[in-house]
Each structure stands twice: as structure tokens, then as C-alpha cells.
Image 1 (cartoon, rainbow, N blue to C red):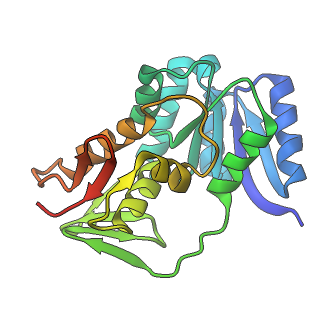
Image 2 (cartoon, rainbow, N blue to C red):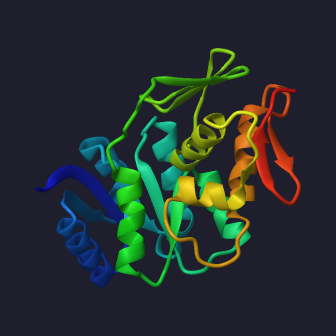
Length: 226
């Protein structure tokens, strides 16, 4: 059964675009369209996609600015950037622009579809909110409130914070985080978790709040008050 899920492909190579459309259709998704980055914002407004996939190399600075505009207009679409090379700077650049995650080229269909299905799977919400200290995470709206002030999160930031808040006072390892938040086989050494933790802390501590995501050196992270 095909699921009506709008996926917007931006400035992908023609052969790759055709392949991704075909592969997404095989696992039941339709409504996949392609466009150029110069037309992408209007397509987001009209089609309200659940996922946006864009080529970081081909879109350049226009792609980064597009992501910022998508977030500034309040869209909750998942943004996935295709990278030619995984570096710390590229990951930080992706996060800065408002993207949720990245996929390292060349294209491998199994890994790509695992990532897509992880993000687009139906939410199985057993409770409406998770509360810890001054944080309230609404699982239905994916909204974070700090002392009743709404804080914007990317999808990956939300999933990471949700996992940490679901294990208050418990030290969770990097491997546990990778298994439960990324949801697919992570290849190679990377400090991607540290990058996301850093961005979460910037948002959680922006108003002078105490650090509650604490590092346990050599082990992982823990949510603690004060």
C-alpha cells in the first residue's frame, strides 16, 4: 500500500533522483517530486513535504540559506543533506542551517531507506509529555518548553533530547545513543553525538539555565538537575 508522503528532492543529479524516487516507491512512499533550489521554497509552501532531501555540494550556500528560510517559516519538514565528505565542519554547517541529519554519498540503497523509514515511521506515542526539571517535551507536537518558553528543535535534536529525558539520572553510553537515536548502523569513528549535544546545550542554556546534560568522561551522558 502506497502512503501519501510528500518528499521533496532538491538539486539531485538526475540519475540519483530517479533512483531515489524508484526506491522510495518500492517501500510504499509516493508524492516524491524534484525541483531546483531556486524554486524549492515555493514548493515547500504549496506541497508541505514531510521530508526534504538536498545535495549539499550542488546547492552550496543557496541550499544552506534555503534551510534557514524553511525553519524561519515554521516548517517541521525533516531536512536530510547529502554529503560528499563527512567532516566536523560539514556537520556543524548542516546543523547551523537547520537540517536534521545527513547521508554520506555514494548512495547505498539499504542504508538510505533504513534512515528514511526511521524518520518517517508512524510515531508510537505512549505518553503526551516528558518533564524534567524546567523542561517539558511535548511528544505529539515535538515542541520543547523551558519555563513555558517554546524552543525550536530539529528532528535529530528532538530525538536525542527525548532519549536522554526518558532516562533521567541514568548514564547512557555513546553506543546506546547511536543505537536508539540514529537507528541505523553507524559506520566509522565520528564525534557526531558531541556535535548534537553541543547544539542542544546551546539551546537549553541560552537563558542562563544550569547545565543538565552532563558529560560522564569516558562513558557517555546523563540528565541531572544542577
